[in-house]
Image 1 (cartoon, rainbow, N blue to C red):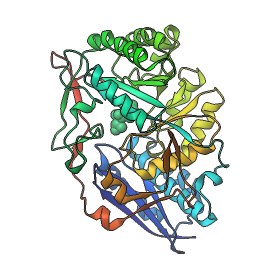
Image 2 (cartoon, rainbow, N blue to C red):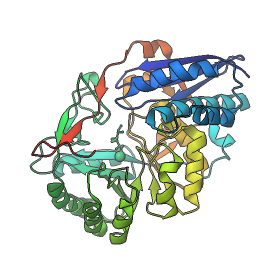
Image 3 (tube, rainbow, N blue to C red):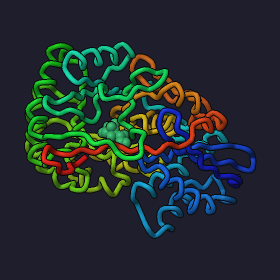
Length: 412
Ligand code: GCO
Ligand code: MG
C-alpha cells in the first residue's frame, strides 16, 4: 500500500487549520491535523519542504517505522513544529490503516472501554451574572462538566473570557477568540497575579452556591503563577472541590510542581504545550500531576500519545486531552478514538467548531447528553471538502500576550 500523494491543505474558515492528506495507490485517503495555533505556516513548510518528499512511495502500513524515521532520522528531535508535523503523518496513516481494515480506529486500538467520553466546555463571563448565564447555556447544550473563567476586577482584557470575543459575521458573538486573533500583530492583554489570586476563590464560592456541589468544575491558570502562588491558589480553591486546576506554573520547570503538590490536594492538569513523553517523564514518575493535557496534534500523533497515556496509567494518572477550537475536527476525532479505547481516560475538552469549519471538515463524531463518541465510520470518520477549504485562504493570526501594569511581558 504505497503512498502516492501527500498534500498540505491550509484553510481558514473560522480560524487557520493545517491538514495533511495522504493518498495510497489503492485510492485510500487519510487525514492528519498539524495545526499549531499562531505558527501554522512553520509546520506547513516543515511538512511540504522536508517530510512530503520522504513519504512518497513509502508503505502506508508501516506506521511505527515511519514515526521513528521522522523522529530519529531528523537529528533535531522534539519541539512543537516537528511534533505537529509528525503527528499529522501518524494520524493520517492510522486513518488509512483503519479504513483499509474497514473499522473505526478505536477498534484497531483495542475497542471501546466505555460508552462515550465525558466532555467539558468553556463557560466564562466578565462578571458573575454573565458567568452564570454561560454555565447555564453549557448545561443546556448537555455539558456535565464545565471550565470556569472570569474577568478580574481592575483588569480590562483577559484571555479566555467570552465578552472579549470578536463579532464573527453570521455567527454572532462567538467565544472563539482563544485561538489566535486575526491581524498583522498580536493583541496585548493585561495581567495582575495578586488581583487574580484574591478574586478567583470568590468566583468558585459563588458558583458552588448557585450550582451546588455535584457539577465538576475546572479552571485554567494559563501558566501565570510562580510555584508558591500556585500552591496558594490550589489551597484556597480546596473548599470548592475542583475537578482540576490546569497549567498553574510555566511549562519549563517541572520541579515547580513538587512545591505546589506539597501544599494542596487540588488535582493538577498540565501539558498542552508539552510535545513529547519525555517532557512528562519526571512529573509522571514523581506523581506530580493527575491529568495529561496533551493533544494528539501536538504530541506526535496517536502512536506517541498512546505511549504517553499508557505510561501515565502506571501511576493512576488519566487523560484530559487538549480540545480547544485550534485542534481541528481531524485532531479532535483522532483523540476521541484514542480516548474511547484507553483504560485511563479522564475527560475530554470540547469547545465546538463553527458552522464554516464544520462545512469544510465533515464529521461523524457526536456529542449527546454530555458525551462525545467518535462514530463508527471506517477510519477516524472525518472528510475534508477541498473545494470548501479553498474558499478560505490563510489569514495571519496570533495568540494574544499579556503585560503587567508596569509594562513587563508576563508568562502565558
Ligand atoms: C485550553 C487552552 C487554550 C489554549 C489555546 C492555545 O485549555 O483550551 O489553554 O485556551 O490557550 O488552545 O492555542
Ligand atoms: Mg489550557
